[in-house]
Length: 463
Image 1 (cartoon, one colour):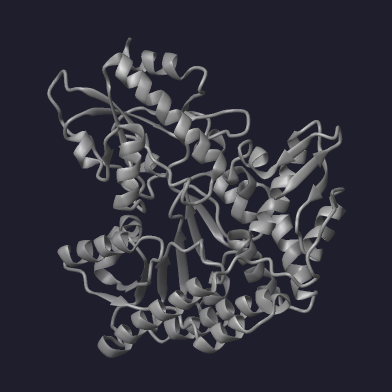
Image 2: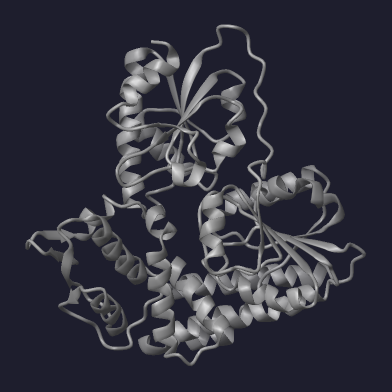
């Protein structure tokens, strides 16, 4: 168990820190980038290429609990008067070195070469197999020959929402989406319903590189995982080049090796446009011709390390849903926009989500107002049932089921759905000392805290 000792000898544990600081705040900070970048350079021992350092930094940013913990401790110290000065935790020597440079002593350590990346071997094997099955389908039923000059790299319905007008004249490539097979199945159904032909395709991960990870010691595992991703995306870059397209549309700022994927294509004058698939900030290193985002905060984040990209703000990235004409006197309701915080191990968000749903349930019952949870698209049916049982509030997957009967008022933490639903009713964003939604959505939004939740909603509903 991790223990943190402050200047005044106060003893903290990991949950104490995670309950105070949002993971989004950490990812948004330069501190976390600095942590991952320094770790990457140390792992490669200054022998890796610039792109290898960038890809490994991206991997650590997305898939390293140790990197996150270093940043969490460091971030805590930027805000706390009583700072952490000692950590009792099984850190590897590289992590301990970085913490030491930040004035924090690590009391215990692992062997020098302990792995920093979180990689489950079973998950990696499944990843190889699924991508190979998608690729088998492509090479059996498809080809690189096409008269169309644009490609769309897609995973789920978000790609269609963002590039709706491009679909009729583009080659639609669909890649595996491991986060929610049900969501991808619904995407296939939507494509077929709209008469779009699509090609299944995967990234060329190899069993050879997987076996190298399998039999590597901890000291070499991070480098083998880097090679696993780097080689696959580099090869796939040349595969995409075989389509002879002049334009690629994508939404993949979450792909760690994306910078390798597009390097050769950009050199060969292929224009690559990425549209942010959400309000969050993902891999610190990206590589596009054009990057369309929701706000200046996102531009500031990505531009720190990627200055040559043409950035653009477009809050109309997703066409907003229009309200339904309802009869006068239609019932009002509170719609909470669910975040899959527990599944993503977002302790700060999960704690506050539970507390907020409890308070909304009490408020709704006392005032006689309907309360509904609009669940996140990646949520399974089983998780829906659990939420319904825990909070005794109906869970709805489709917004249409709400707006056809109610006039909604939306309550949430951090959801890109704001840009889909803002025409449907007022939005109220949770805020507190450690989390400011205005960093993501601008200064004009309506906010509330736990302390003024009831009075805020009373004013909204005219009570």
